[in-house]
Length: 396
Image 1 (cartoon, rainbow, N blue to C red):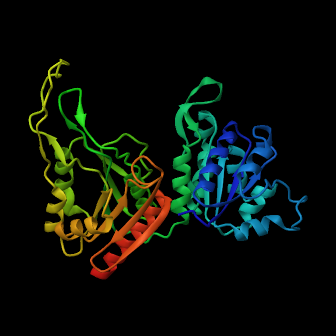
Image 2 (image 1 turned 90 degrees about the vertical axis):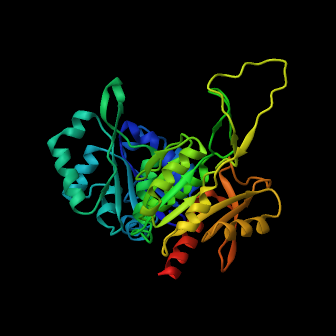
Image 3 (image 1 turned 45 degrees about the vertical axis):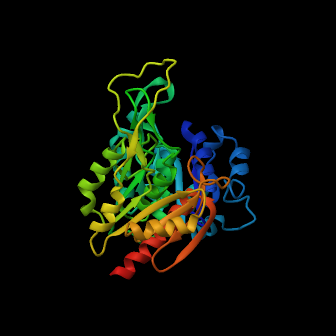
């Protein structure tokens, strides 16, 4: 997590400088302390007041105008990570050559903090042998490069050189500052609500957005795990996560059960439908004045199969979305399904569960229980992973 981390955000003079605003906002929203440095070129593209208003501290840009007589060493020594977004060809070349000619390059040379560099420039510039050599030089020194993307560039050209997405940049920073305590684990996460067809047009589903499952996948990969996400929803996939798709409860069951033995941890965050139509129609049911009855039957609860068939060191995690008797119902599911951990939440509570970005959960194991107060789903995800790690350590 980036929460509590000090991020020096360097912004250089490229057209993509305006995107630094979104990068800054995402870092701040996730609890980072952001100190922005703008080069003189960056100020031609982005107003200093804008970044100062969003960041944790006002923009810094001069070696001479700061109250601190040595601002570059103070910034360099206090930083947990230095992020350059966007990084121009000029900045890349200057840094690779070890030249200090402004506050940003001086800070880079005066710091032992990890550096994440996000190039953005025209395709011809990005592909120039000198730029590529400088990139290789920086990589050999341990600098993390978030490669530019293909897409529409300034002037209407299309090619490689566009600044990486905000999520890709954030993920790179997060991985850089996060301790890899899950590095040796393979984790399978499910997300979203299943759809059980009534006919080719209609289906039975639930309110699950998949947000908590995606947050779990994102948090796990940031902490070094090899993560596979089995999802029923279309959302932007966290960087570094492998994805498999499903739609119905049977689809999800087939995907998960076919590979369950390959994973150290299985987190069933998906909201699997409890019921499905007994006889789905292969043609659309026409509207009429007659009352239509729909016969439904229970879906197979394959989480029970996972619990019964787990290996001695495997951790199986279930979820319980309840509206009453939260603790009682969650404990019953934990015991009946032979789970190691169940994550229970009261979906009738305000700002909790389903489509919200926040959640409040009760974590229950066979030995203990704890409450995670209302927090972002990403914070909740890390608390769940902390509990999983403790369970794994107790098993080994």
